[in-house]
Figure 1 (cartoon, rainbow, N blue to C red):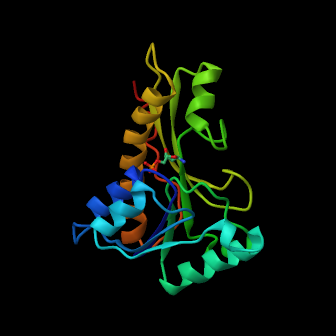
Figure 2 (cartoon, rainbow, N blue to C red; figure 1 turned 135 degrees about the vertical axis):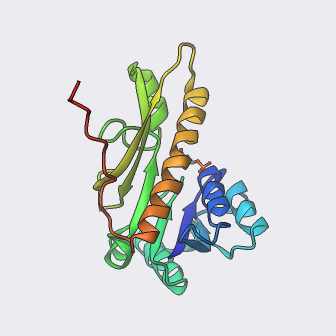
Length: 203
Ligand code: GRF
């Protein structure tokens, strides 16, 4: 499967996919990495791996809808089977979703539907949860509200601050992303929630 990955930051999720894709049996190859801004480590990670990159800046377009169409057109050029939004800090719009909806997934550092939005890990910590985690879901029109594909739980430790908790979540997040993207790529991109282990009720 051909992957396009969208990023806005440090790119540790991207790096996990780049590393996984070096295995020819993984089932997915990264054909391009796109960003909404320059000068981020994620773009350097892609360049170091020899993966083509592109940047679609909001300020280069008259409005968000024009930006959305520009992003759609650039992603289309790479003919992806799957688009992975990994730390991408923009909401894709209706034109993008008209073309790539249903095969665009996003990873979020909280157990949706709890704590959607820009600061999932911080909001969970502030709420006082004892278990945090991450969610891989199908991007839909709303904010972080698409069908859930898989989740992973992460304990909150005494003394955690946002950074320590988010780092622990990100370790689980990139493992979940690599596992699920590989599964979907090999299964021919069927968006089905991961089989959850049925509780062993035999006692
Ligand atoms: C990830 O936790 C992602 O879920 C959140 O921001 C973080 C991006 O990390 N939206 P990175 O850029 O993949 O290192």
